[in-house]
Amino acid sequence: MSLYGISDRTRIAGTATFTSGSKTVTGSGTSFTSELRTGVDLIIEDRDYTVATVASATKVLTEEVHYY
Image (cartoon, rainbow, N blue to C red):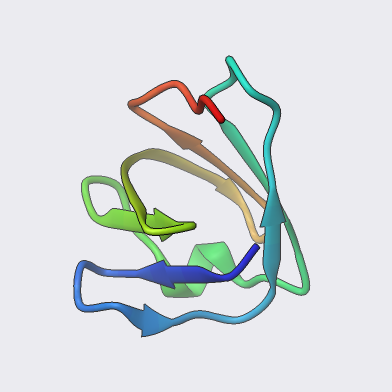
């Protein structure tokens, strides 16, 4: 899935996957530690999620649970 961050719909590197019912976003080819920070919006498939924790370059936890 395409990723956009920092509330301005700027495309960020890589792609992401998540499991329905989870708050974890797993990236591939991502640089979450340099492109995101706590409290900003992460937009996945035209849905906004607030970043709770940037755990690593390839893992982010959101405040909201993902459902699809």
